[in-house]
Image 1 (cartoon, rainbow, N blue to C red):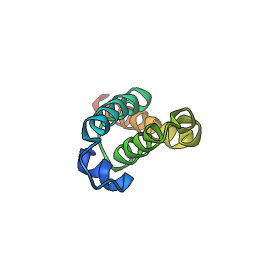
Image 2 (tube, rainbow, N blue to C red; image 1 turned 45 degrees about the vertical axis):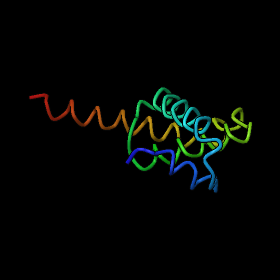
Image 3 (tube, helix red, strand yellow; image 1 turned 180 degrees about the horizontal axis):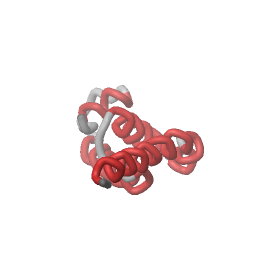
Length: 93
């Protein structure tokens, strides 16, 4: 599952549509940023990071996001490296 506008609104407890365009913009920016930082673009941890980055951006605290989620970001990017190494081991004969 990739986070949607409805997921963002539920995460932020927003029940109106006044800010839908703004939230959609934050969602797209957050998806791009998390993919850039980790190399991952799907999965539960990815969605959790995206939703939390949107929350930080929405609350004008984006400068704190990377510091607070650094270990999760590194762990997710490390998972990608481990997956790549596993694939190369399987193809080597």
